[in-house]
Length: 183
Image (cartoon, rainbow, N blue to C red):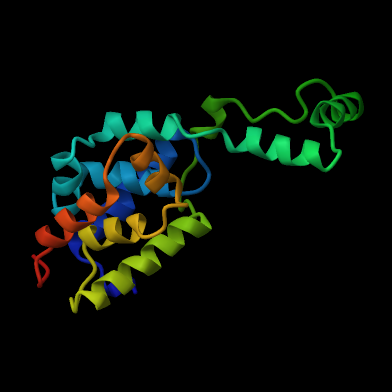
């Protein structure tokens, strides 16, 4: 599939990896793809900036998403699992802070390949489908954005919706901007 990626699509993937690395994240999420797309020079970046989505705005929208760990804690509570009791038992056995995340400075030392989260892999797969649907013989940044917009459960799509972006209008705009042949 990557052989079909245009130069701008490859740059988006590289930039997403750098976004993950700079944030100390161990996997590339849809939010990293969104951050990279906001910086892209092609149709995706133009369409995002056209609706007011810049890197800072995308970051704010992602930060505004509900904390998944809080949702997980509530689900576990419903099942009768008390996370405070689990934490206390772990700290009794292994010492204070046993379940804490590593310090940010240590996480920032990630080097080499950073893997994609399953939903980010799905975005790249959907970008191929979008390219084929549009009868294009390449995958560009615009196709990646279309893949990202295809499932509103993706964190980046939820962030855009939460920021007030009309996903249908954005989708139409990026389709209009994608050239039939790679530049």
